[in-house]
Image (cartoon, rainbow over all chains, first blue to last red; front, side, top):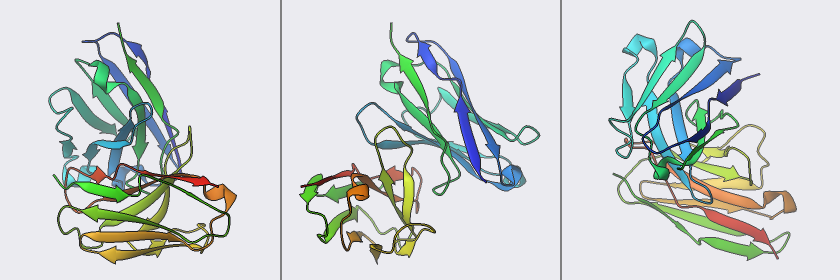
Length: 115
Length: 107
């Protein structure tokens, strides 16, 4: 059974940093392209970024609103996806989901940026 | 960026009604298109992939059609468990983009 479990969310002040993790199981993580999507409270879905499998260099792409502040990475030895978030802004407040593209999603982790 | 528009933004229908949701992309995305269902407090659930393929385990009353810029999600006979918000998404080009969602209610 495929499982994606996010962790690391919480309350952080503007300008602060947070690292989210997504622990994967039930599939071959090392060959999976992985994604982060976020959803602000009461709002729609917004793509955050993508990381290719290591065979393709683990290349990352980030959405414009987070580019230069957020970084996707992966540790295939731990079957874990990461999202390093720096210089956080109130508009980054959202539930952050990891997914495998469409079919499998985690339960989400809430990030609140507020003073 | 490819903009996705959905209509209606919300709808209310009776159990057993046929329901149609449309999504339009600002440029051709071929069949690189998904439909999701999301219930409050839950992650989105894939309903249709590649524009017209029913995801495993999804009831056959759901169907998808379209290609290029115009897409449709149809629920042939609305059931109480179909209540939620439906989102479309294109994956033809980065950034991946979603429609704003359609909230489905039961009358």
